[in-house]
View 1 (cartoon, rainbow, N blue to C red):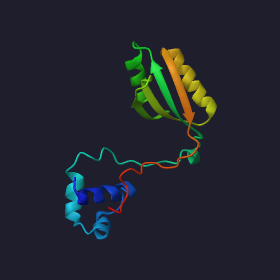
View 2: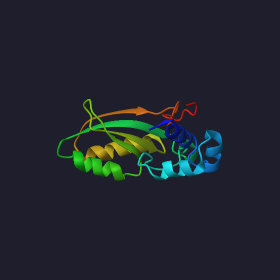
View 3: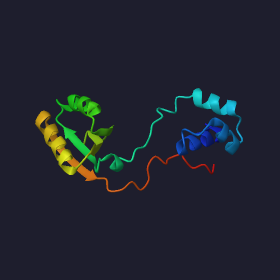
View 4: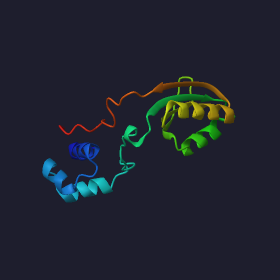
Length: 146
C-alpha cells in the first residue's frame, strides 16, 4: 500500500460519502485512479453509518465479556450473532470467549438480557462495563495529513 492508497483511505474514513471529485481535488489524485483503487480492493469491508443511540432512545451501552461452557460455546456464538441488542461481537481471550457491545433502552433491559443468556446457556463467567461516553471512535487510519 502506497501513500496514495493511504490518503484515499484516510479521506474515506473521515467521510465515506465524499464525492470522488472532491477527494480528487483535495488529494491531487485523478478521479479515475481513486475509483480504481476503491473498486479493486478487498480492504473496505462495509460502508455503514455511526448512530447516536442515545438520541434513538437507547440509553444503555455496555461491553460484556462472556465465558461459556465448552458444549454451549458454538450455540451461544450463533445466538449472539443474531440477537438485535448485540451491536458488535468479538471472539476474545484471557479467560473469556466473547465480548459484545450491547445496546439497550435501559439498564433493566441489559439485566434481562444477561438473565436470559444465563437461563439458555451455561455461562461460566461474565463481566460488563457500561460505556459512559465515546471519547474516540473509528478514527484509526483517518489522519489526512499523510
